[in-house]
Length: 428
Image (cartoon, rainbow, N blue to C red):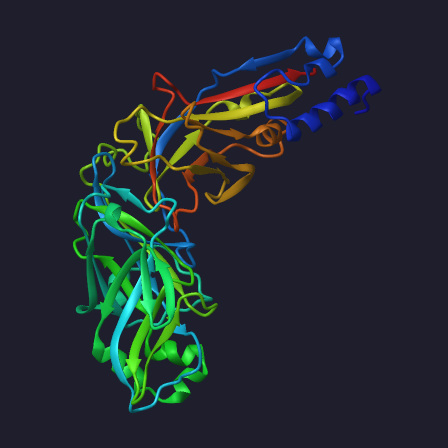
């Protein structure tokens, strides 16, 4: 159907505004012809339903941070985190068969920006094990992988006890070298160090040869039911195993690094929801919705449904000027101890149950308004044009394999409800 220039110009301007403006006013209305602004409306009363769902499987390989610890959450139950990590020689072998190991130390630098989650004043206990399963840097591992099958629980390489808030920057002096380190250092068995010295030089010719011998470490909370905290570690030049040894004439150190392109890194979560209030309704959107839903890294997500949106534009031609999904966080205590997710992401559910990211899929928490806002104007426009159908959204923790946090989201049954704020123009 052909349209007059008068009709085409508003459409062009509207299209530009959809992608370029996110202000909370009736933007663009002054650019339209007077006859085109008469039908502009803003509503925020569309029906919205939301429910708590299990996150399901997700990628756990190559996280940017390492997580370990456990804590008991009054709203989310018991959570523990652990990790597997590989190391490769920092250089070719320099050992002689006459060299004697003095000590071997695992260094784990803590994240200086957001080091812990939970009670950081509680004593935390972790254990280090030797991996007996080969993992690969270029393989994709899912969260359904069972870490308990990757190591021998009877053979502990080392342990550490610490209070996260008491970890301080310290100076490490070795011979003439001085460096600063903030994290935890764990002594590993002297027998392992000596065996590494005795390795044939051919093992050092390839990173893969060395990993075949020493497959890596698995680090977990000594008691995964403890109420402590989850600590977050950097993966950088300070993440290493240092083997201190002496020769017939001198002392030296040989490093094994986690920064190699050939080292695999995996983070794992374990969640126990048996004591939570949502356990009876999880994964069921046929029940009456609660006043809140739950989001947790590697644990639970929120399913959001817009029951009437597919029929909203029936028999009309509607131009979407703005569509913002406004996600409010629930008023809860202990937000200092349990901060909300700094970012959430929104994915559209497809007809076959798979998901697709939206153009504006990521939202950062607004601590003043206590909310997240997603611009879904393009998505709503596609629905109104009949290009797609709405089957729901999943609202999830962002970068959950590297960052642990949890958030309570209000539903439409809450006094501060979730809303879709929609500004649109009915053209004809």
